[in-house]
Length: 473
Image (cartoon, rainbow, N blue to C red; front, side, top):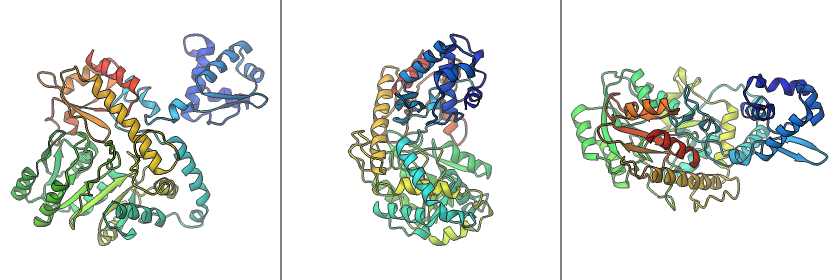
């Protein structure tokens, strides 16, 4: 055990500074990287000193640091156990954002992602493992999804006002997988253009560009949302067969489509035989108090896609398509479908999380997190994200940059004004150790939106403070 523990720490002695500090840092890194699992019982101080060839005093100092920082729990007579500190497990911010992640950046704000709801996820994982025995006696070959998960997703849609049967659900390995399958099935005429928003989600643009689709951008702004008349003119003039829209806390602007605009889009789709793929991955990230009640954008020619990645954890690669049962059967015949289907255990975990709590998470947003059900998880996430959003907005108040504080989602969409371009600002920030996403990344033409910048508020307030200082310094 002692030798295995020492090996898990890696080449920590090469770090500058006192040995005790380097040893404590090495233990923290090994726990985060999974080389030392949380819950591991440490050897005694004497045994560690012998295995690491250190003085006992150095080991005691290192363990004291870890204990004071919450990385170690010691019970008299039972020894010390490694654990993750509460400041990591009780937040929405991924640990990696505090340590960089984009190349050589010290801080990475290029991804609008959250950490898992720690306790709720571990509990769901345990229940999923207990339920997995029946899966192991079957083939494990990809299907439309585990029956229980399809039933839960159908029930969630039905409860929120969109009547859905399980056979209308196809489970995928995320929303991008869902969009890939739909585009492959629906965009059969490469000459036919595809309507997208400007700006829009870069992952969707990448999927459409791979098919060499001609993109028809329609503006959406945080302040004014969607111009449905402009959208109608674009459809009438160009005859597209497919559109991709993000009506719920739009990525990146945070705009939220009104109920009348949703009805207008559905009617437009019916009139012009336009299939609309609606990305609902942000729908549950409603930061209003209480959350709103806008209906799904739905209709005979509207298909919904969703994902657990934004609401729960990006590491849970479970998404879905909600469409007609006939279309689901057609998509199932795509040879790619098996490759874009999540493993059965991940589906079990998703079912445990989505089925634990029952409702759509219309909690009061007090952030108490009193319980591990989905409602409590959503209420806690919303409260934390709301505070982080407001903190970031406050930091930017005197910059001269303009923005609309969104009612939901994960980011602010900034307009920098003249003469600064976002690409220039991002390059300067990168030189200071901060990675951010300039507007052209979200543009269909890769060039417009030059004076816009996306800043996620998924980081902790102290990290957001550091980031804005680097961005404006």
